[in-house]
Length: 472
Image (cartoon, rainbow, N blue to C red; front, side, top):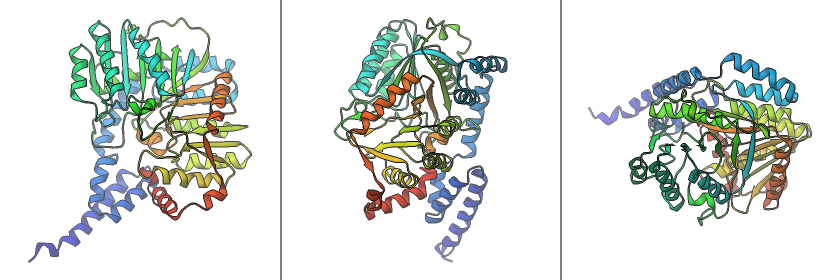
């Protein structure tokens, strides 16, 4: 009897088994489950193969649970947390106190301290200062990037790190294996031959999910960098595809460098298997006793709670006057979308700025789909046209500001490892709002009339992207 006679029946049976397994594995997230069920239904068997690469399979769950357990062992002691809560009660307003307390729920040290801050809105200024700080490093340099390109800027970073390693400075490079897939073995050899240590972070190289999306550098335990800018020529506006690159990055000098260091060492231990937490030299005394209050918070698929998203929600619901958001990927989940719509309907000035172009498939359609929902609620939405907008910021009432690696999308909330700085300084927030308003000069507002008259091709793209948004 011909084997192909039974093939359709076998495929149907296998697909039913796959669907049952999927429902079991994804039972905590119904929206993701429905997205995967759609794929399994439309492309049987192949859909499950995709799930093995993109979904949170038992092997990945086990890996992240182990990391979570180890991270929690290094968390802030309860007595220290309670002392800090007592301290902030007298120094911060009610909303700030509640956000800070929420940050303490992250399973890593989320201290609040005073810092000198410098905010960058372009890559050239950031790398000029970063390279100067690396050049002046005396003891150690810890580097973690999602993307390092094998181009002129990437080569400059690698060669500078190698130079410092050869001088006896401790250099550690942590990189995401997929994001840095273009980083050559030759570049890594240059570092290792000079005495530096390198380690890839995520063990699942073929996944587009569960990536270390963090971009942070710690120098001598005194200076830290974090934000949206990776290492590559496009991030300094030197490529034709994106031209001007608008981003936001932060230089921190002060107490919160310890929180960044703590985060790096947790990730380094996971990737390299080297525990350095008890080395006091990595947490030197800080001479800064005033400046901007900052809290560093990180999250990822190894956490039970989506802490950064929870803080975003607290900020949105706590806003009294205004909410300003910049994000390249505006694909919020339902709680965040409803929070923004509720804020807009209650009279809060909600402004969302997205790029006028996309760097990934489906993103443009998905961005516009969710923007349409907000317009109906009275929010204002803008497309940045001067170049590519990669900035990841949220500010409320010109009072509280977040800068970091977290996009306003499900991938950042749930699937990637992220890190953000929450700044409780009215002067810094007001300055950022001026920058936001300046960006509005190079932006086109998406009006309800314009949205309703959008092309059929965009409508189709929106529909498909919206349907796939839980797994984008």
